[in-house]
Image (cartoon, rainbow, N blue to C red; front, side, top):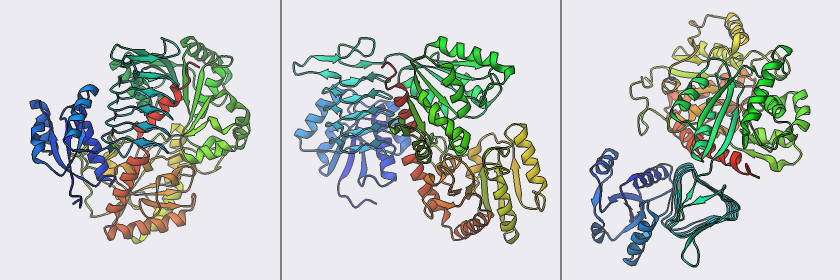
Length: 607
């Protein structure tokens, strides 16, 4: 229980009132706020809103008149309409009440930024440096505020809106969902009291008579070399759409989960288009598919996108070539460091990177590697792909996504590895699959001899036929059968969350990796053993959320499995899992990350 004698009352039970409630509960859960919630007041609550509060276990206190009986409370005015909020706030302040600001743990607040009393900063918000938020400012989920910007009292910035740097948003102004206000502009009330927007071009910013900024439409192309993997682009597509952009995704004409999910998204949203290309992306076009490459390049150029976002190195090479001579904003997002570990590619990137306006590195490790190659490090930024912490959550989480799945029985020590099997590369880590399956199997064969109550589940088949062949070779070289080693190896599962929910520890022993499956495990409150390859160490605090071991060291992996086993026996894994979950929510939430990527893609698209 909190030791604070002051309690919190939220004014407003509508949509934003519950957003404020979620923000409070998330901040309270990770210790960012030390105040107990007394309840919610609302002068005109609907039956539906009252029922939702009841489902959340939150007390409805009545109308604002009930505040008269409360002397030790702080107020969070969670009324969406800026003018009504301003009036109610003024009345509450005149009665001597103090305001309580609320900041969601997944929000990012920059240096030298001030958050005014009563301001509410929701999930996934990005506020840059030297920003001033006035009293009672509302930043809805996914909003972005650029450097040196001022938001005056009772401003509302709706979901996914982007406020660029050196902007002034006047008192009680509302910036609509997906709107983009360019740098150096003014939106809202001026000294004469009239609402205005001063902008470089009517095409770039639109405001209505009430000073509300509306969205502008831009076209963004996304290029990805696979239709099977790469589900991490889906939050980015959503973030770009919510920022007002039309999105066209180029993927190979092949079956796969990504293609299916994008098709579903396009069916529900006419602002998303999926273009299947016959070109099979590779490091170099083969003579047989040069015609397909030219067709892809023609389609991409005819789209005339304002910006192009490309992932994975083969996609980058194709897109850079297709856009030669075009002044299109080019954003290269790097999923992992593997290509920079290849000497030939590393040398080539010293020249080829010049085609990129921005290189978004998926980890700090990748950024450091690119900084050694790129001239002009100002084009580099580190943004993780992240994990959807509202989808990946422990079974006992708020909406219990896994309620019908089996829980951890506790009768055996359950270890899980989730990764496709990649065949060894010719130019890097020669003879070894990059995901570390061989190292894990060697360590497990030694570990399991002394632990009959241990079981390993591997989820992930061979990637392409050569990966499947390598997997069979691994199994054939084992000292005993999979069954005798107590290993279950699944090609795929319908819902990987069920597998995580049944696990005590996750293992990611990769030789080259970005953040990988460790983020999914952490979000599911499962501690991990990770190698020190690439960005994996960034996902763990050694001994607190999991363990970090030298890459390629099967003996160290075996010893760490032993340490994790002792932690399981001593019932210490639960606390480690909770710490891992809190870290994932704070640093690696994919919604917040996708918002930042969308800002990078759209910033400067008209320059």
